[in-house]
Every structure is written in C-alpha cells, then in structure tokens.
Figure 1 (cartoon, one colour):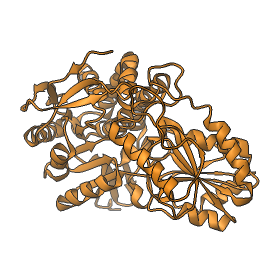
Figure 2: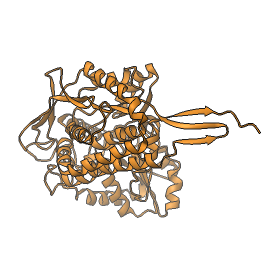
Figure 3: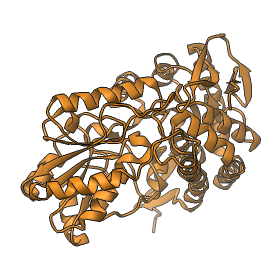
Figure 4: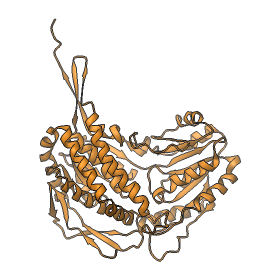
Length: 478
C-alpha cells in the first residue's frame, strides 16, 4: 500500500494520450497522508482536443439504436462489478470512507446506476404524437462533466451514463483530489469497446480544464457538481454561449423532529444521516431541529448515538467513520467548530481537538447546540458536525428549516407519516425523508435555491440530456 501509482496519460478519442506537460497532481491517501498516486495536470489544449473528439463522434453515436448504446452501458456495469474490490479500495483511500461502506455505496451504487440507465433508455418514450405534431426527444450534444471528490464515481456515473445512453458524447474532468477511480473507470469503458470519442477524460484543475468545458463553443451542456461558489463561476462562463447548465451544489439540510415523533429513532437516524462519509455529503442532515422542551432528552440520545461512530483509518475493518479527504478540508472543518464554540455553542459531543492518530485527516464527530442565526446554522461545513437548534412551534421549525440559501435535502420525523408529510410540503427543498424513509435511486435528486438546478437519478436525470423537437405534420385531408 506504500507504492505510488503514476498516471501519465489522458483518455482522448478512444486512446490513452501521453500528457503534454510533465506537471502532475498528487493524490493523497486520506488515512496516511502519503501520496498514493499522481495524475497529469491537463492543459487547455488537451481539454480542447477532447471536446473536438467528442464533437466528431457525436453524429455517429447519436445515430446508433438505443439498444446498442444501452448494451454498452451493461458492459460497463459488468466491468465495474468485476473490479469492485480495486475500485472500493481506491475510493476508500482517496476519500476516507471505510472500505466496507465504500464497496457498497461508492461502487455498488454506481454499478447499479449504469445498468439502470440502460433500462431507462430502453423503456423511454422517445416520440409522442401531440395533435398534428410529432414530438421527439434527441440528445443535446457534447456534454462537459465536472465532478467532485466526495462521491467521485457516483457523481461521474450520474452524469456520463445517462448522457451517453441518451446519445450524447462527453468530456469528463474529475476532481483532482480523487481522480484514481475515474482512471479505473476509463479503463473499464475502453475495455467495453465504446466507440472512440464518445467518452473522454482529461485530468486537471478547474481554472484550466474546467473553464475550457464551460466556455468552449462546441460544448452544448455543462453538468457540474461541487460548491455553490464554483457553480456560480461555471454558470457565469457557460452563459456566454447559452449552454444548458445542470448544477448540483451545496446543502444545509434540516431534520425536523416533531414533539410526537419516536425520538430515539429520530435522533439516531439524523446522526447517521449527518455522519455518512464523515459528513462529506451535500445532502447530509446537518441541522437537527427539536422542540425546546425536549432539548436535554435529545442531547442524551445524540451522545449515545454518536458514541457508536468509531473513528479510524479507512482500511481498518473496525472503523465506522474515516478521515476527511484532505488537510485543507480537515482544517476548514476544525475552523468551523472553533467558530461555533466562540459564538457560544453548547458542546454536546466532540470538539475541535483532532483524534489522536499519527497520520490522517481526522476530525472528531461533533454535535453542537446553537442558535438559528449562528454561523454554523447557515454555512455548509462538509464534515462530521451536527448542530442542534431549538424551536417553539411548527411554524418556527419551518421558518428555521427554510432560513438558509440552500434547499437540497431534509427530513421530518413525526407520530404519523401524514403529519410529517404535511410539514414536509412546507419545506423549500428538493427531497425530504419521512420518518426515516430510505433513499430512492430512481427518484429525482436535486435542489431548490442555491443548491442548484436540474435533477439526477432515473428517468429524471436521463431527461436532462435530451432536447425536444416538434415536427408539425399536415393534417390528413378527408
């Protein structure tokens, strides 16, 4: 595990192309801090070459029967399953998610999505008669995909799989922090025999490679997942050529616990939803809203729940919570915890002292009681930090839940599903879990407000990559 894998090529037009520059980007093992791999720092010229390859391949790929494109996706799904151990280990090291969970969530989920998007395309209604018009759906064209590091393979899959089976060609810029999984995926795609130019991968930095994808006139759409700040930049650049833009950005999701809820289940479920992937989840339930009169009870339940999240290296079987992805992310999260304490937070669990490991980007799982106007109630922390906010009545709970610039996820816990759904309808957010309802990978995923626009998953994510065309037919004469 100490050797460094050195990648020297990008994947452009169906082949591995040696990088123009000798500059490389280090990839760190989040548990050991060692450099586990390096990838080439792509140039604007290489990004443009990838875009032009995608453009040249588009007409031929779009003209293929849907079944042919779907069959290629099935091959990729099979390839991912065959290399799931290798892929899970790479992501566990890059991102920090414990290995067992990484295999199930970070690899198992994407493998399922590749096969599912093939099914979606096969079952999709591509043409529909509307009066004297034939309304057809067609691929939008060349798609630039810019993806994050927290669920790297998942976010790549939710863009390139539906785009490709829709008939689009793609250029991927994966996160420079967690790119190894993307390189393995490119090998799988190559082995699946997908035609040259349909899928292209250029590693590099956002201001270099990402900005080419956002500005290039031969790119018809940009699909971006990342911070709201970076999403605004992508939108600004892409708007100059009126590209379609899909953005999946930040979140500050509220889990609202009503007075008649099962508090043990609600607190345990909220803590788990916050701590997934060490809190490095855009839709994490990072605000727990509780009745003021039940605050002491909630504190005790939260302390019991958080105590079960044993912290340790991602490859250690005993670990339930791994490190954060980088030193920068660790320091950012610790800074937020210190800010919360300085603003008068009630430290329920954890704190700003990192766990005692010789290496690794670790942060204690932390729970703080705060006010709805505090910094930690408004800013996305992206770490294992849950804040507890008290409310007096349901109207105040809704007002607090809706008080941030975000609207990505959330939850409501109540005595009945009907009561929970009534409150959930008042929340300005893209998805709400009702009394612990599990994630549905076919339901639309995306946000309101500054959490982005567009949707991912299932037919909803597939349709993002399609255009409408109306062909007006002359009515038949009688």
